[in-house]
Image 1: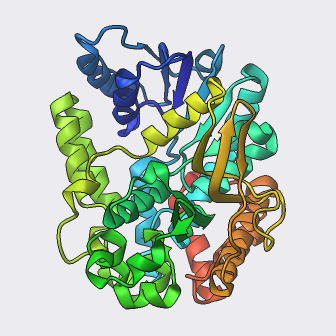
Image 2: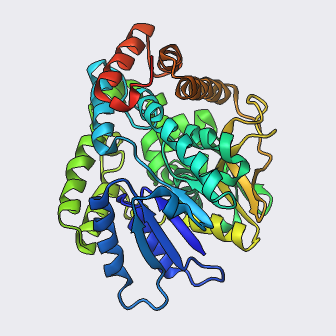
Length: 432
């Protein structure tokens, strides 16, 4: 099987490669093609992969190219993991927002909108090339903001593009561990949008175990989300939110922290790309994961949360389910269909899906509570304004996206954000 990674010079590519090296199932990936617009980053990651492949029998053959059509030819699966503007763009996203007193996180609020506005046009161009060069390929989208980017690509690739994120499975794994059960034997009642979802139940043998966890403060506050939100608030919600809901439930504190994740990662990864070895990559990875959302915690992240076994494992399970017609249930980003009555059929949501050779179909879940439905519909309206702006190039649609977001508190601030981002990012010159 031939797998193509777009954004193949990205820092997390060795995680995917590690999963491929360990995979011995039928239909495994035998050819890995890395594509990137930056040759230096491609060479750095290629060096790490070559080091890790030494002595591994039947390791996938790795090639690298800066030519998109060459990369896509004969692809069975395509992982889209691009970062338009790089980490310097992310740092600028945070800085512009912070200067105006609003959240600059890269997938939530102003920073996420800026990132999407410069990413969606590129993702759409890529989707068109995939449709032309590799129409039978399945596309697995990692590119953030994953929900809106997946929805943009789906307009050209239909059901053959599926978005993934490791946050829901990480949440499910931590909740299952706190309850002492096997996540693989459980049914997670989880739904929302990417980085905006809630676990409302964890069913084992037809019994929902989540109420038992919510009633036990010690167990509830033994893992990441319990520490982040606190037992009282989780009991009030009757659910466990995705960790990114912290930015909605504690907005003032998040803004006041002044954290600049992009600037930190830019400097951290510069050191790796200047000296690319497996040892330097692994050291950088562990530091990256240990400091993930560090501004929200008073202590160090649990060791059990640092194994790196996240999105690459979801992607591998998704590939095998499709390629081998092996039924699996995975939480994915796919068109809504009739799953959430508050959204239209084409709106990309994040929900448990049944996956087989025909792709991924969202399963029935319990309805959203009113407060959750309000957030989901508000943020989906922002997604649609982003897509309108990226399609038509109208500055008014981009302004609408900023102004309608729940974490942007005035139209005047929205205008300042748009002006600031257009000044920082040449990729936004299309907005007029």
